[in-house]
Image (cartoon, rainbow, N blue to C red; front, top):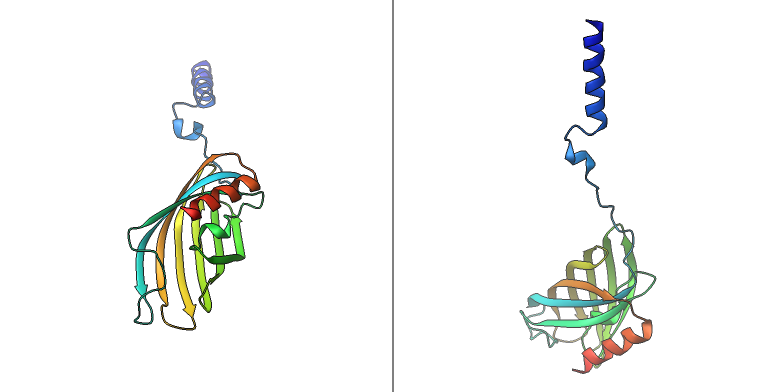
Length: 177
């Protein structure tokens, strides 16, 4: 009888050591990416909402449903270039960036050529090794008419390696078109 119990216990331990058919425990769990990989990203932003906040025509060339695609170079800092989010004639700087554990948050402040006041943007996105998805929210604070709020979706795919110089050329070509 002791031999039968010992044999059964040995068989049970052997099955447990082999996994016993529990495939869920054998599957690898993907670790979150801590920072965005440096490289060239093709970003597309599409306007999903645009409304005047002062009752006048918004001072923007964007329209609901319009989209812009740009090739940008993400550097070692993991930040999306500020120039990727402004319109032609905008000069933008990044404030308070956060890029960690698959999340990117970038507050931007822009000045528009020929317009007094400022434009504030907030980029909120999730990223993986080879892509990004999120939103860009914009509010303007001009000294005259034309203030607006705008929401855009943001998607992007890492397309390869790049240098900062290549990214500048790509971005300038996209703005010129």
